[in-house]
Structures are given as structure tokens and as C-alpha cells.
Image (tube, rainbow, N blue to C red; front, side):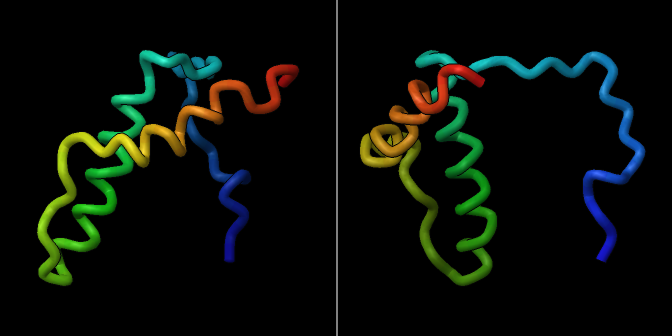
Length: 68
């Protein structure tokens, strides 16, 4: 298996920054869309647009490893 870090990728225009509270809804949307894409093939109904439990799981990441 090839090392994914060895692929040549154009990263111009890409910036990495610390997540903020305002990012949590979009993080949830990406997570939900990924789960829905997988479970739809299994015949499961889509997850709701808002899931407070998942938002609570994402929230601690805002304070994790602040020195990095």
C-alpha cells in the first residue's frame, strides 16, 4: 500500500487553522452527510439535520491540544 503522505498534491491556496465554535455546524454536516451516504445503501433513513449529541462530542475538540 502506498504511503498517502508521499503523493504529490497541490496545496496552494490551502490554509489550516484552529477550529472555532462557528465551525461545529459545518463539521456536523460533513459527518452527517458521510454517514448518510454509507447508511442509505443499507436502507437506513437519513440522520436528522441537527444532532445535539454529536455537537456535544465535537465541542471538546475546540480545547484539545491548544499548544499545537
